[in-house]
Image: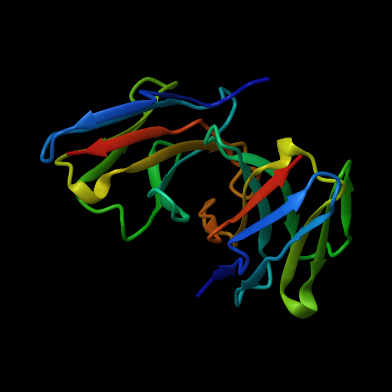
Amino acid sequence: EPEVTQTPSHQVTQMGQEVILRCVPISNHLYFYWYRQILGQKVEFLVSFYNNEISEKSEIFDDQFSVERPDGSNFTLKIRSTKLEDSAMYFCASSLDFTGELFFGEGSRLTVL
Amino acid sequence: AQKVTQAQTEISVVEKEDVTLDCVYETRDTTYYLFWYKQPPSGELVFLIRRNSFDEQNEISGRYSWNFQKSTSSFNFTITASQVVDSAVYFCALTTDSWGKLQFGAGTQVVVTP
């Protein structure tokens, strides 16, 4: 069964460092997303991406965040200068259409020290 | 503004008991979609069901069933004859036509003991 894969599964970084989280969405999907879940809290939308551009982003997704689909298969989330409060599980997801079921990856846990 | 409320933080049951998870939503849009996702201890989010606002038929899938009632803005989820493998956090979520921007509820932790 096709699945969304994410790397790394866990990354520890120092505050102020840049981090790139990688995702390989399901190959025939057209819509891509990043969500995050701070430990013990609800899952929060960060950004959606379609046709090589951001479709929508939340207030959380400020100038420190960026997304890219560099090569037609990977979908990356970059945090330019990490803060302590960026520590969370980051989920990548993809879907065939924008109201369809989202297929989530297993998440990348980011710990900022 | 959209909102999803899952008032139950945690529910503990003994295996074979039924468990019902409540979900109440708020939206001004007439077209919207409701979802349930399961998050087992391994952490991934597993899609369970999607419902659109025009389809109020209840649905059953194996031991899972869903009751969608627009009159009360609720989309409740029942696990019949629960099993230990059902232990997980269950999230209800809502989206309108906002590019897959799901609004998640806080989640309900289900603990099933043998």
